[in-house]
Length: 154
Image (cartoon, rainbow, N blue to C red):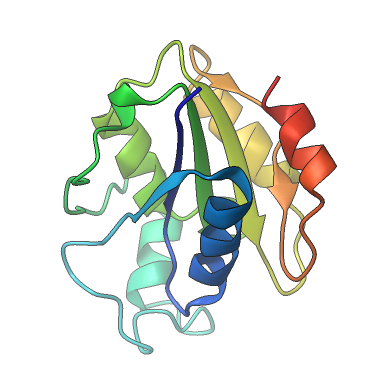
């Protein structure tokens, strides 16, 4: 089975985890890059006028991103990684899932977070994309349990 690790990383934490998964699973990986790079001011969740706050307060927000060089449709399993924002995935992930028709693919979310769990984002993703095969995801920061990862792929 062909595996793709597609991820959004604003501070480098999620990228670090994605690269570890890539090596562990002998997968391909590619970062989902926003059309307009997020600055530290954009990411200031304490500022209700910051770009991230405005996006997260609008369920319809779909920030633009550069299409991947790798075609997700060529893969059987797609790990989608992101930091937790406001207890869910960043809207950039929703943009990605709106753009690519991933029906029939196994989708395994993974998230990084300093304090929030992944459950809220899994519920949110499943509600937004009920036709997708979204498996239980994992919160991955420092430790990656290879057995749990492989069990999700079945």
